[in-house]
Amino acid sequence: IGHGFAGVNLPLQRKAYSAHKSRGPIVKCNPEDSPVISENFDSMFRKDGTTWGSKSYPVSTVEEPEPLDIVTKSIAQALVTVLKGSLDWYYHKKSDFARFFVLETVARVPYFAYMSVLHLYESFGYHDRAHWIKIHYAEADNELHHLLIMEALGGNKEFSDRWIAQHAAFAYYWFCVTFYFLHPRGAYYVMSLIENHAYHTYSKYIEANKSWLASQPSPAIAKEYYEGGDLYLFDAFHTTRAEEQERRPRVQSLLDTFESIRDDESQHHRTMLSLVERGRP
Image (cartoon, rainbow, N blue to C red; front, side, top):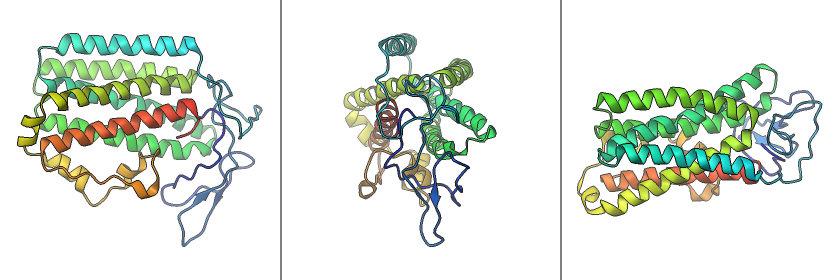
């Protein structure tokens, strides 16, 4: 994404892809080791991040992407401000869990949109995007479990909340597909703002309700997700930390649960921001 993937070392699921003609990551396969991706990457997107790269558009793998233009940033910030304002206005007197249910329903949508576009490009023979599909799938899976937690807390009990969440998600999906297809880094910038908003929303909620949250048990789905034995997808979306700094949350109370969700949103924000600013996580 943007310029260059030098230094990226992302494990691929199961068997590594072989080298594809003259494009894409060159994967060195060793039956005893995890596949290692070499530094020979073309850029996924053109230099300014507005359109997809192509075989006829060679891009340097060393330079950083150009800064995102002020117009794109302004439009993205205005969009997020409208979305945030609408949600806060409607839910300021309603249950926090209902608001979080809507937030988490919509939060999954961009990752689905990214995967849809990336799958389309795979159909055109651009298999070097496969590792991005894995990351975005892991992010979507994480948001799914946030959603399941909110459902376990009763956030979806009202028909009106379910109706708003479902219709907002449907409309937002098609917006994200179009925006990501035309301006991938711009779409990532929007998502970085949304994830940052989610992080601060949960932080404020935790500070305002810390004593009560600490006295409540953690939902079973939260313990299953954060403390379960299979943390492959949980680890997969942590792209901006060193391997030795792996997260292993312990969720004994509802406070632990919300702190874990907040920290997940922080990781999503950092991943999206890195994609915008560096062209890679």
